[in-house]
Structures are given as structure tokens and as C-alpha cells.
Amino acid sequence: MAFFVPSFSYLRCHLSLPRPWISNRKQVAFGRPYCCFAASAFRRPCLKSSIFGTGMILSKRTNAVIPDTPLLGTTNVLDAFEDEYGGVVVDPTFLPNTSNAFSASLRSSLSYWSQQGKRGVWLKILEGQADLVPIAIKEGFIYHHAEPGYVMLTFWLPDGPAALPSTSLYQIGVGAFVMNEKQEVLVVKERKCPSHCAVIWKIPTGFIDKYEDIFFGAIREVREETGIESCFLDVVAFRHAHQVTFDKSDILFICTLKPLSFDISVDESEIESAQWMPLDEFINQPFHQEDEMCKAIVDICIARYQKCYTGFAAHQVTSKLDNRVAYLYFQDTVEAAGCVPETSWYKV
Image 1 (spheres, rainbow, N blue to C red):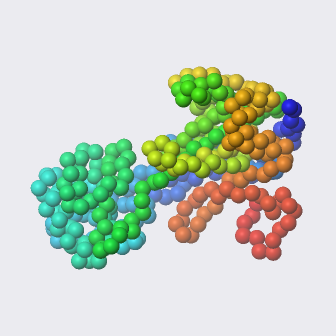
Image 2 (cartoon, helix red, strand yellow):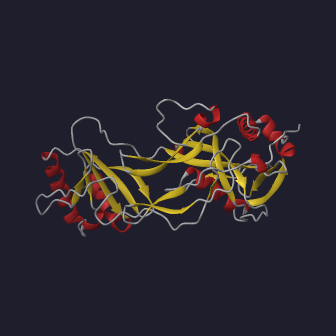
Image 3 (cartoon, rainbow, N blue to C red):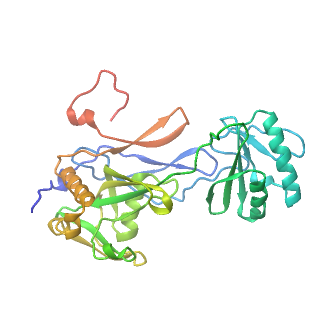
């Protein structure tokens, strides 16, 4: 079965977007603009990644969404700050050093905060303070989540069911469909995978990192697994599943990308092999023919390259609700249809 794919010489880019990142002092800053050498046939932005030493490090005794409002009480009340919802966030850097002192301060603090009409209490205990965890559990705290270096506990002060938000319920992944001008698809064979997947050539996939944008994660996964540099075109579909790893729900974003280099260099720790596979050979693999989801993904990606389907491009936006810079993914339907509403809220 043959498919016609328009030449990439027709693909032009009209937009260059900077990648937002969070500096170590809470301000929103920008890295260098992504250089857009090409975009989709639908005039989507083609986003090319750069390497940044980014990450979010909160200033001492502050939180990005919590005002610096100290809760002043007696000398035996733990150092803490109010959050925006009538709760309390305990500062882990000022917890008592001994178990007896912590236990006494914790009891006094809960009594004081309850009298003040506070609601939820957030208690972060650092790795070096792990001996304090059983004491907090004994006082009625429950586990909320854990990350490398700390565990977060919570306590609901009012009577009735707790109204605190739950921990993260999702893990986010990306799948990258990359096709060159020869109608060859970039595919990999994973080194460690379930036995029924061992012989399958598949598109590069992986989880996005903390604070990482979807489009940047797709570009990074392609680079890490195959050594191929690429630029992001759009999100064409996403898969939503439940009870996956550690009983988490899972969202996998399928992205199309344009290759900017072509020499493959695999990450041998994860990938057994990688290659540019002819499109016909890729879609005729028995697994892809028999698996409903895989077949649907490939059909959508091919339709996108044939100009029969439009995906969601990344557009940089800001919001007064939280003063954050983010990416909103949506179709450029205004330009594609040649129709401009009387009240247009965005500029393409």
C-alpha cells in the first residue's frame, strides 16, 4: 500500500516561540527562542529544542503559589505560612531537632491552628528527618505523596471529610511520529520490554520530565533514543488509560515532528536498534495490523501528513489567574478556514 506525502519543501514556518522556564527565584524567564526552520503544511509552528539548565527551586520559606504570610503564635507553634485556601504549610527547615520537641510542638500547633479556624495542614518532612514521620502519623497525619528527598503528610482540622486535593493521579508520556521526505518512519526496537513487544519496531516513546513541556519532551525523547534532532509540529491524538504503572492513570500524547538530522545514534542502554523504515514496511507489521490503537495512531499520523487532518499546535499564552506563561495546544482553524470571527481573542 502506497501513500503520498507532500514534500517538505512545501512546509514553511511562520512562528518562533521561546520556551518558558522557571528560574530559581520564582520569576518567569525565557530561554533563547526556538528556531523554526519548518512547520507543517497547515502553517503550524515547528519548535526546535535547546538545552537549558532549568528547574524550579523555591526560595527559602516561600512557595510559588503561597503568599509569604507567617502564622505568628506562641513560641511552641511550628514555623508555617498560610496558603491561599485557609490552610497551613509548615516550613521543614525549622522543625525541632528532637522527637520529644517535635511531638510537643506538633500538638500545640494543631490546637492553635484549629482555634484560628485553619483547614488543611501540609507537613513536609525531609529525608534527614525521617524519624519524625511516625510521630506525625501517630498524631493523625496521613501520607499524601513522596518525592526524592522528602515525604508530604497532611492533616484536616475541621470536622467532616477532608477537602484537600489528592496527589498526582496521572503520568504523562509522549510518542513521536517522525517521517522524512523519503516516506521513511523513524522507528526503534527497545532493549527492555515485555516479551510480546520484543520484535516490534515502534515510534520513540517515553515519559516527560518534571516541569517539561509536551513538545519539548517529544523532541528530547527522539534525541535521546535515536540521536536525531527534530522540531515539533503538532499533537495529533492522545490515549487515556487507567490503572497502569503503580495504579496510576496514563495519558500518552502522540506528536508529529520533522527531522532536522538523519544520522542515527542509539542510546544502547534503552534501545536495541533504530532505523528509518519505509512507511509500507512499518504499517504492514503484523502487530500494527492487529492492534486497534496502533493502527489508529498510524492512520491519524499519515492523514496529518496528507493534509487530511489537523493537529494541535503549541501556542504560548499567559494568564492573569496565576501570572504564568504556558503553552496552549489548539488548531489554527481561523487561518485554515479563512474565517476570522468578529471578536477574535487570539492572534495567529
